[in-house]
Length: 66
Image (cartoon, rainbow, N blue to C red; front, side, top):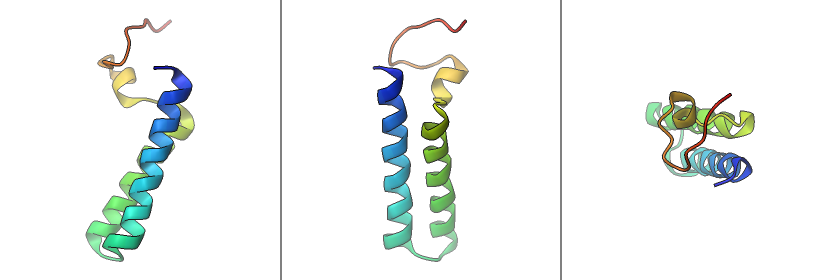
């Protein structure tokens, strides 16, 4: 999977979690926690940072970091 596809996957997932928190959970503590989790996922996609790749445990493709 290309780097661009990983970024778009995180952006899409983060946006979906944000919408879910906004429309279905509402202004509850769980809703706010879900919203901030969605923002974190979106931020990972926006910055191009895959947490699993950074930890060296990404199973998508084997690559070496320089």
